Length: 589
Image (cartoon, rainbow, N blue to C red; front, side, top):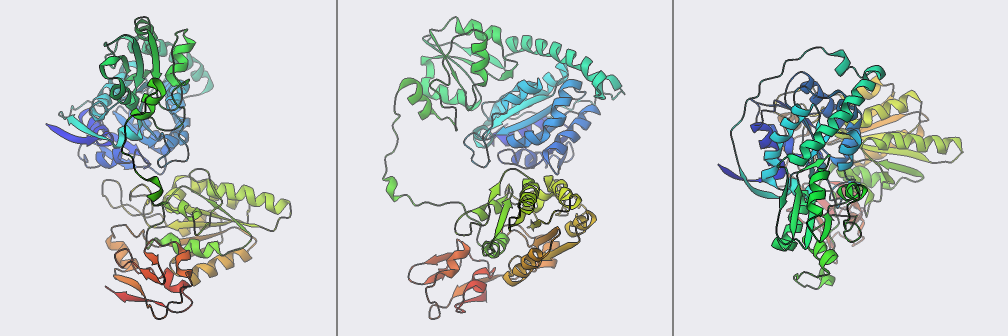
């Protein structure tokens, strides 16, 4: 049977067919759909959303030690969070096979950087495989698990945005039930004390030598002989781009097992071609190792080191050819910067926050990062998940110490708060900071597509779960001033911020209203209602002051008068509250 699958869907299918029985992840583009598609295999695979990537990998490690085939998935920056257990499990080795899927994001389509996580395989000294299409994304899961178990190593399964989200025809197979390996207590193997670690490190180096021998013989690394004037070494989606540009006018060493590299095979290939190119996205990961081995090649001298590659870039870089494209008048393109959705519960809060003077707003990773954009401009920083609270604390300490009259407001989403914000807030409470922390609880993990989290009441596989009470959690940490507000009520938000700014102690404001795109649960309907309304402009009353446009709602249009697009409006009333002339009213649908 054949299906048209994305790379992420194919990885999920590969996990099913390969006998995986445990999978965990934290959602992050471009990796999110892997666990979403594993979730429906509820009878065969236990799958869960973890609060963060470190936890996701740790629970997968526990499953592996217990004897199950396990998988953890995350985006590239998530591996930074999970690096601590990754490096140690590289030392100890596995019981059941373990795959860590790293979905890298060249071009930063939805990320704060474009780090190349192939370096993690080399740094942690673990095996790495890289699929180049959807079929390989499925097939390589099983192979990676076999490598993991054969060589006693975790395997980095490196994807990129283009592989994750592009679709291809995939030949499906049946599930192979793999018996759980027996768990045996083994302190020298699994207890990573310095004494045990010194022994394990020696074994790790021996393992790498065995993996390199395997790399030179595995069919994952294959040579495709054509014209030998040009030889190309590549992996992942870059291999597909190279094939599109050169076709049969070049020979290829296509690498699917990319750490350790097959240096013997690379040398044999290089000796038979006139000019050798290494085509890879981002860092010269393959190129540097080849050159270090004394093999002459051309790579980042011509191939860009920044951003996604594509066939046009490769053709221009190596052949000096501009590929034919459709020409159009670029001056007629209308800029469409990302913006918060019409009715987004964050908009009212950020509108009020933008009016406050003498504050610094430290932001975080989520839809609400768009609060930094025009016309709100209500965010000063965004570093990484959970950093808003701790960064805000550091800034506030400096302002206080040096007599600078400025207050810090840290802004973080509910899922991000559970991810790494809790420990940051502990730092605030413990060190008696006077920052203001605002937790934007939109009742779901919004940015990555509405995944459940510890505050939603449901698990990945649809089971009911306890709802973490954010106000009580904050109070338990020692925060005395904790209030919850409706972010669409501007007066309520304004009072909460003013009250917090008057305090000389830590405070927390929780804005609680569901994401406008969320499918309401019965609990949502009970708490927030289900009334369907829209706002309309009374043309005769509109004075063309444009104040309503300052909230940045995409449903508001303006020519000579304001107008609200009824197909986009959900009646949140933020614009109604902003209008000084009562020219906007709410009506039922």
